Length: 362
Image 1 (cartoon, rainbow, N blue to C red):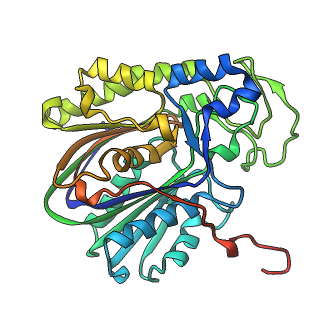
Image 2 (cartoon, rainbow, N blue to C red; image 1 turned 60 degrees about the vertical axis):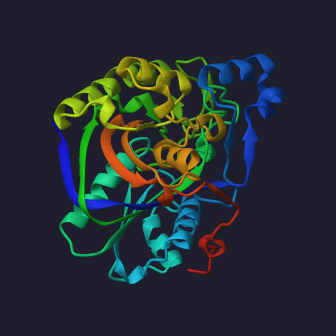
């Protein structure tokens, strides 16, 4: 079993940002008809999403979240020893967007920066990676950033997912905290990598044709569009995921009663309802944000925390978190955080104007 334990490192603050471009599901009625949009909302629970502006990238949203975090927690940036950016929507194929983010946030040269290519499980994996590096170092703070603009990778006529994905960024500040214990369970199954895949643009097939073809779900796409096998993903979500949560509770010798919040990747409402039913969870301790933000990949866990607890003071959350999806990849962990260190979601239309390189400028 892939289990990791971290001691003495906790969450000092969480902030999230979304684009200022709100897209209601009902706006797709003119494209797909009222029956399709109504059925989509009824099945998924999603009523609206936020879509990045054409100029905005995942790193822009991550930077906006980080700036919001620093506005609440004045940190000496020279004491941030590592920064991690979790994204599958990089600015460039090379270099890592973490380098650009380091520049924009004014992080010191002594701050190690790296990018983690993970989606729906990215918060759990990223958190464990950051904590592990902090555990073997002497720096005071670590910064975990996340950003995603999956809406740019979806066929606008794909009724199965074009109304589902939302864009967002997150920033989590980690610090040394005496007495904090975190246990993480991580799992992967590459044999199911085709369940959610975007075939074109990588080095396996860099420049295929753009012709559209009929996929197994009866929807036309090109190789440049995200494909999701909904049936396989649903089966995975209601079988492998609760099994992992059950294993985690046994491993940590904890029960549902030991937590006062259960924060899941916001895939769709039916999957979350199934997790609530299977795990016998109290509904009022399972916050939802997907109705207003859609599926924002790995960012959906911190986004849900900011949405649900961003204006609550004086409460200590003992949360069980679980991210699951593309890869296939999934993970479970526990976190403790004061609600007055969780900040409301902000909206941004900012982007890095110097980031678009023009021939002759480099």
